[in-house]
Length: 516
Image 1: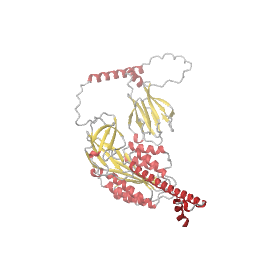
Image 2: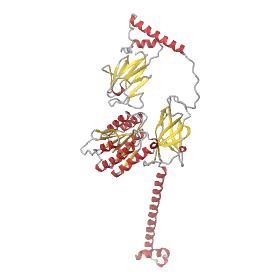
Image 3: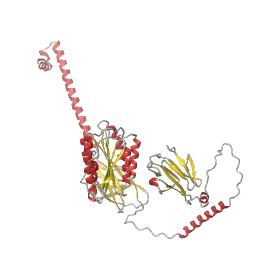
């Protein structure tokens, strides 16, 4: 302790101790003190920077305004289904109609004129809980899942007609109960247990099954999948999660997830990719005890979802329009996701009635006479074929492949003035007797941006294309894994004639033209 007491004295009055040793000791003490002060200053600075960073993160955290679906049954007013939650999934309540504004194609439509909640409307809700029973899931986690799903089932049962189903997955998908009342779901959940011997995880198959079950329910109802999972599937490619999310969105189905993976949280990003495609919310449980509260958050969000009514000023025109809602109360505006919807020629009530169009019966009669004449010409040509002229000699460099065959119908179509129209009709499965009209170029596949979207696990994303060419239609393989089979023969290209049968994946179709 004595040197520490003497050093400050020597710093103040060096004449008291003129020796070299004392001066050196004094300089050493000064440097030590300076280093201590410098270290303390650095610690304080780091602490302040850390605090500022945390405050900045909190300030930048935006609540999530989720636009789920619309109801156009009461035009010129439309009803918008909104969920408004904090970043952690906590529901934001206490909002007023004027807090929300609608934009259509980036044009302001004004504030809402009415606001209620889903629970107040008592609309039927169809829910399927998809539960992992293998991998990181233990008995404690399963117990939390059971309790949480029971509470969700009770909430669903409060709406007349609401039903809930349960699917469990490990090596395979188990339909514990497809749809039932609260008491039936409670009984089914009591049989749910961990499969410790399971070696694979078929999560995406389970979600696909849930989507198919919900699609069978009444159109226009709210449909929800609640997935409790570690985010791992036997085929863990990102594109598969994207495809499932898009499939749910096309079916008007929302997927909410509770991700539980204490060992590899990075796998949960796949769940986020899936939920954002169908306007769902992903929640993360870091321990089994957090699963129950996260499921309760979903119950709260379901019951307190806002149903916001807006007056619409645009007239239905069968065109796609881009809809977005903003929350503009309390400072910085919050923007929802955008949804593309078609106004199916449903004009606002206040719109002026369109002038009555004069009858054009004479025009329709003229067109019908022209078409009938074309058919008669085609039939005459068929009965009395003209002697064929000798074929010209093949020219150098030209392919000697035979020209595509054309039916009598195609000849008639050309004679009628190139008014060729074609359709493909499903022959098997859920697409039996479903007819799809062909455009000039129609891509068929499982991708949502295809012209004809088919749900078939053996079909490629962009399987084939049907092109309007030479007064008819040609089918072209786009590199599909399982190829294209026409009349029991695999082909790369084929000029279609009426009643041609072709198979894509496991789905079969028949081609028809305007005269077919």
